[in-house]
Length: 341
Image (cartoon, rainbow, N blue to C red; front, top):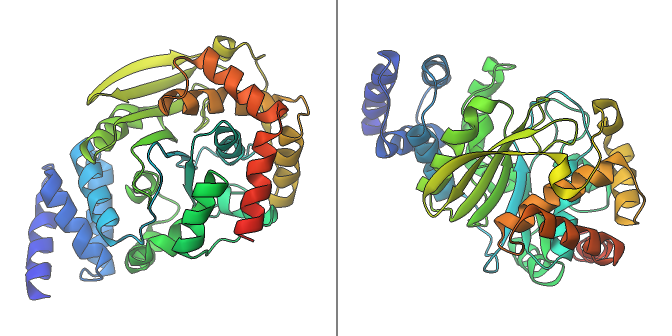
């Protein structure tokens, strides 16, 4: 305990002086915080010191390693992916990544969907999935069964990251200011997937998050931020993206026209509460045309490309459309409802 306190004081002083931490140092700092061995004042100072100076890829990677070391782990099949956003874009859109998870699962790619309740919108992933009849605190055994049979499961972040309760007080006192933890959650999937589609709330995080994902062992990832501010691949404008592949990060742009869908307005993508958004997901999976369907197809196409199921976005979109119109996406939801009610 005394060693933890001394170590954290040293790391806090380093951050306070504007220096950056290496991966091992960051992992040590986050291990101490999530173990409950730093005071709320120390944690608040540390988190704000990182925020003011600007968090680095190494600090993100170290923080993610610390969270992963304490996680309630779920075994996922080879090739499993996650489709997740940081939230915090304040647009209140439909639950794009949640709907896309069923489409990608219907196309045959296992999706270990990691998420939480809403903090800045009316409906987070956990809220809408609960409204669809899916349980939020499911045993590891049942989650693994769902991944095998439905090709999709939902990993409720607080259920799997119990150590996060030790930083909850400090984070609450800093709210509504975002901290590095807003980025670490989506980077710390309990199934340790090797491939991810990640949406971030600010363009400046594209490259650092992609680099950090590579440093914690991901093989391929696409980190995205819409030019309209969405933490998804948007259909109202082009989307900036950082692509991780074979340890290298490159920056690209994605347009709705790349998969042949029409541009939408933000008003057309505006969602509501959990029950409203759940009904919208059902309509998409039933094959109903809409702007929501279009953005789900675009994001699913990208996820299928990241998974290696499609060689490009156009082929990914074709697979996504087939998953929806062939009833396979709806079947994935129905199976998950049966296994994880």
